[in-house]
Amino acid sequence: MKHSNVILKGILSGVYIALAAIVYIYVLSTTGNKLVASILFSIALLVIVNRGYYLYTGKVGYLLPYEKGNVKMILETILGNTIGILAIGLLMNLVGVNEINEYASSLVSIKFNNQWYKVLALSILCGILMYTAVDGFNNINNDFGKNIIVILSVVVFLVSCFEHSIANIAYLVLAKTFSFKMFLYLIIMLIGNGIGAIAINLIHSYIKKSSV
Image (cartoon, one colour):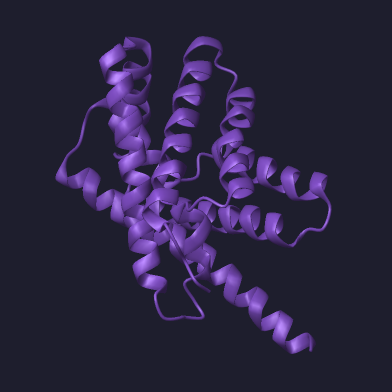
């Protein structure tokens, strides 16, 4: 599969994920309603899949079976996602919404002080759901079904407190904090998301080949 403008499409995904993180945090901090916050967050992934943008958690599942250029595409996607998040984070920090910074800090404190193996497990589970969302969108034939699978997958991962590596970058930027430990935890989250997504894709591919 040929990939073009990967970094630019990755940046756009990062922009929407950062905006979704801001809305998610704002709704949680003002109403405490996690379900509503999660549904609103899903708008970002709906835009991303409908527009064909590149989000790490939506692309990493297709890393295997390996094709030439896949690793480059994944790395460029992560770079683009990060740039997009940093751009929105910079704008938000210029505005200076203390409530969002404070709530983001509390989220970061919980997420990045968990045991590493729990973080890995929660990231794998998130990877499964993100692959389910994107692959379902690509393969379900009716518009309602393909969009509702995206919304439900996002709601489930957020309500269940699974770890989405790219969303967590957004929380770090909004919290205006970073450390070497957080960097290592992000690597664990990226790996976990990848394991979950790739595993389900390989199983689906095996079933499809076996059915022929």
